[in-house]
Image (cartoon, rainbow, N blue to C red):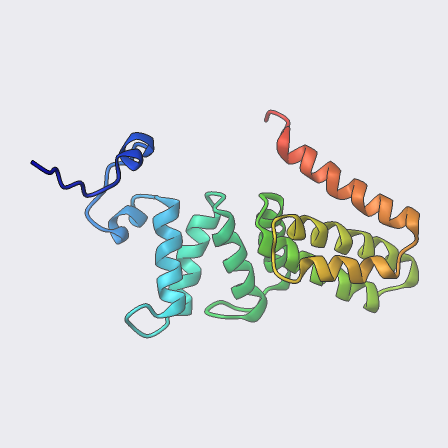
Length: 186
């Protein structure tokens, strides 16, 4: 007699206990599930099976972002920066981008690196060094996670820096990583 298994035995052995499923993703989102809220936002933003609704996407992303869902924070920041479904608001976009980056979202880290890099060209010479150091740090962190083009970006920033400045950029990235690994209790 053969037993037909719907999953390999090792998946059953190592599976994580699941949370109880509510009726549907919409209900889960309405009950405050951040992952379900993010998923709804993603569906509205991408028009999964229907027309895109950026305003609805932004609302669901905001709900999930308010619960520290880093990808929702990143997507909301992109929408705020571009005025997709919400009024354009660079200050709020930067705030959400920083929150996502501080939680380790590589896309947000890369985007912050780009913002700082652009700022290094637009500002005063004394501000350019600080912007380049921050750009280097954020690109370095995103590159450590394999985020596309981040390694090229941080190398491009490093070309215009002194050896000591590169060391400082590496120290900033290491300090950030250490802080994330050992957060201070609230």
